[in-house]
Image 1 (cartoon, helix red, strand yellow):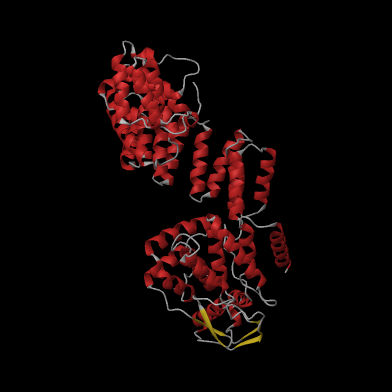
Image 2: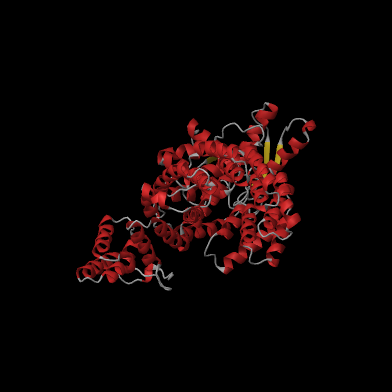
Amino acid sequence: MEHQPLSQIELTPEDNVKSASVALAKGQLPRAVFHLSFALSVDPQNPNWLNLLQQIIATSNDPIALVPLKQDISFALLAVRAYILSYCGYYNEGFYWLSQVLQILAEPIYLPWIADWLSLPESTNSLTRETRTQLLQTLLTKFPGDRIENESDREHLDRIVFALSQLRQVDPEDDFLAFSHIALLRKLGYLEEALELAQNNYETLPCWKTAVSLALVYRTRGEVDPAIDAYQDALKYNPNDLTIFLDMADLFCDAGRFKEGIYCYQKILDREPEHPGAKPYWLYYQFFQQQDIVWKDNLQTYIEEHPDNETAIQLFNHLEILLSPYLGYLPEPTDATIDILYACEENPEKGYLESLKLTFLESPSSRLVLQLYIQEKFALESIPIEIEEIQHPDPRLPHTSVNYLLWRYEGVDPYPNIDPPREEIADAIASLAMQPYSLNSWCQIARQMAISWGQEHLNSLLGVMVHPPQHPPEMAIWTWLHRLQVAAALAIAYLDTGWENSLRKQVLFDLARGPMDWTTEAAIIALMQIALEDEAAAIDILSLFRELLENVPSSGHCPYLYGLIYCSLYLPFIDDEFRQKLEQEKDFLASQ
């Protein structure tokens, strides 16, 4: 069968239809079918083109002979041969050849034909069990995973599932038919119906296949323990089935039950020590279980020994992201004030924090945390604070004129320069800040929030950065405020689209250029994400990051320097000179 991509066919679908019509008028029926097959491979449901094909079939004395089987037949022609066979009533042969076509195509473009043919009683009744099994195996292969998202595919598969329910009444003994019916129901999201059928199937005919079918439905429903019970039942019928242990391991680990998952992977490795699916995951989840970086190194060694194992490479890359600051985790603030509060938490017997003496001026966010902490722990409104030196450039001042200023100073004392947020906005940002951090997942949630809110809620997003809601008991105040600020900045990043004259550019650039603060870092993280999504924006953002690096105070702690270095290194298009400077700064910070 010829697999040449249709993009290599020079004629457009419309040109091919015209050529087919001309050939039909001249009685050149094989040529007409040849041209029409390529048009239909682009739009198999086009009613006019299907009508033309039916005219060709009606004109021919031997329609099936119009498409002889040859070694180099194209998939488009073979699909039309299948159509002709079915149109002439040879449904079993038609399904057989269309299944062959579907197996080699990346997309199931002829799914509408299958749905149409299966809706005909005479079609389903003529299928042999062998052909039906081949067709169903092909469909399940084309739609892996637990859910089918494409709406067009779902529409056709809905019709196919209805036909399968009718077929099961005709042939209730076909266990693969039942398995496929339940699998498609599950993938289409009809979980109640799928569960009922799977339970009935297992009760009626308890075996490996019906137990696995039931386990898959429970897994899709998110019911871990019932799924595991069903998998355990399947093992009774086939104790040597390593795929069941693999499914159980994945299920446990996806639920965060790493110890049980690792045990299942180990059961596989006891039989096949170098199992290409189990070994990489066993190494990967050992890291999560033990939180020891050595397992990342072990996975890297495994990849060096098995360079073709794509699963291992993907898992290693995912670990790289998880272990990368600002991508996979959010580093904690490290101001001297926060170190003092850490010490207070570790040694509560020392009593009150009565005063504070700092060598340099610190960020206003750390001052806010200090105020909230002493109010909560000691019922004090304030304590005396002595600052020995103001850095240069003055960290209280923006680098340039800005429209959005979060903090104002009276002497060395910072105060919020924006009103508190609306309660519903603060609650939504707080719910995001409570989620386990990964930049990708936070951005997805922040984008949805920002799109639903619109630009009119900008002031509330800025307000939550300096007027935080009450922190959850399990999270330190400084961790809470930092996460709120990053969550709010990410929402601001999606308040509008475009770049040059966008609101998000103006606001985030102003925050980055504002007084030295944790909110500077929050803006840097949000801008880094924009740069990763928008190459045009990346040039401006890289220029801003250079500017910020040049204006870091010459002495004292800069709360956003660590974030600025890492987020700059994640940007595309960094020249070698700037990258070298960033690496030097990173090495210097690591040595402190």
